[in-house]
Amino acid sequence: MSQSKLLAVLCVAALALCVSAGAQEGPTSSYKGKASRVLLISIDGMHSLDYQNCVRGVSSVNGGASYCPTLAELGEHGVNYSNASTSKPSDSFPGLTAIVSGGSPRTEGAYYDVAYDRVLAPPAKTTGNGVAAGTCTPGQPNGTRTEYEEGIDKDQSQLNGGGDSGLGSIDPQRLPRDPYNNCAPVYPWNFVRTNTIFGVAHAAGLYTAWSDKHPAYLSVSGAGNGKNVDDFFGPEINSAVVPLNVTTPGPDSTSCNPIPDPAQTGDYTTSFQNIRCYDTVKVNAILNEIDGKDHTGTRSTRVPAIFGMNFQAVSVGEKLIEGGTVKGGYLDAQGTPSTPLVKEIQFVDAAIGEMVSELKKRGLYDSTVIIVTAKHGQSPIDPHRYHGIPGASGTGGASPATLIADLLPFSESPNNPTGIGPTEDDVSLLWLSDKSTTQQAVNTIEANGSAAGLGEIFYGRSITTMFNTPGLPPYGDPRTPDIIVTPNYGVVYTGSSKKQEEHGGFSHDDTNVMLLIANPNLRQATINVAVETSQVAPTILTALGLSPDKLQAVEIEGTPVLPAPEQLEGHE
Image (tube, rainbow, N blue to C red; front, side, top):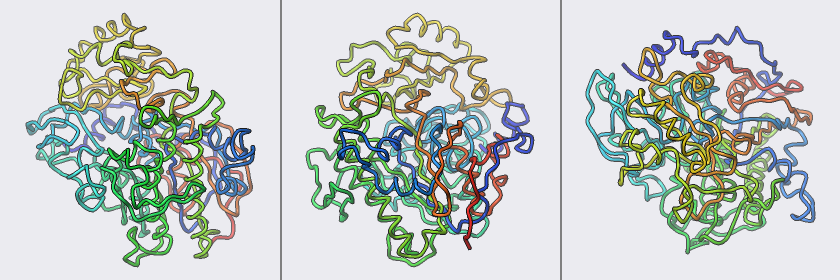
């Protein structure tokens, strides 16, 4: 049985996956069929608060004036959704999947870029990050750790992933395998259970493009043959830092050849300067696409109808303690940014400004809808609330996975010395070797609640308020965790001395993200009603004159389009 057929089985089993979109009444939208293209941008980590601060200004930065002129300009003709929430869990993988599919982890089965599936079999070759190779027994559930990040690259030390920064960089032998499909490797786009905006647009004959941080994020193509993104570009963020022939935009503009921060070359996430070089490579890809070329700028194509990229600079600026001493992040609970974080935000704003300028230069600005949001936030904003477990000294308590290590599959257990480790950041997702030990595991975690910084624990019926019943088909979903632990605010399960924030959890700082829709024909508005980033997907299709009902997740979950103050006018 393939993963797509698994979804049908789960639906038949009535696991709350098959809600009719027509049966749900949501807010109506007036973004109807007037745009020629949509430029979608994810500023990973960008809170709604960050947007408000940088547009309105804070007293300690830039004399109190706005330090985001581009975002301020877009906001003058934009709708700001100040109460937008990303997916739960708020990891990049489910966060991105929600934005492009309209579906939550409940439907898509994407909980984390490193997770677990009770049906799939281990890869034929150990991944670059330590998911061990194993056997695949056809026709029966196997169970394996799943990884859809740099570990499936042919060579994760190279910026191009050892290939073309896309499909050609993915090593199929490092992919989990489907025992119900002749043990074939499960490519990222088929790990996602439904189609996406790229699939709908591609089927309508439109040209599409996307740039992101791993070749694995070709997952945005959605279920199918992996070819719904005509021009995909996924330079590996976790590759070794090399000189790049680009110059970063913004007030702290820097040449990236030679490497601006040669002391931090392990990967691009370890340096405030080097991460801007990495992002600029993707910015240049977008500029080439606006000019009607492919991302390399060497081949003439079409301007995409849906295209865009993610920025990593703000996420790094929030969480990084560079060299263990130079802190990014915030100065207080109201989100006053540190100097390193200000520079990252200014860089992103200037980079988006280059895109806006190029659209105007090409006469495309008025007919383009620009959507700026984020896959995830970052927690805690308040620097005084950060608490690492076990902490840099390794003596500050124990994570839930450590407490019940003997009850976990060896592939995800902390007892595995060469494994990739458990799924824990500022959340803990736990899949058990034997479901019958769930209560035993819960009791152990509860008994050690102080050591684990325990906030809330979800299992049994409390899991099913958010997700499908964990288990094997036809009675359960093979990807739903048996237990989810959300720790106290500020707790991050890490021993690192190089971070002060993380994401993945359910807290407000993790999930409340920027969401702005801009176009010259929109009037400025702020909408405070609660919305979700999954509503971006049907809104994009609506703006392009395509039916949002063609998104399978929209049909399943009844995901509404975003509420809008007025219809876009005057586009051809």
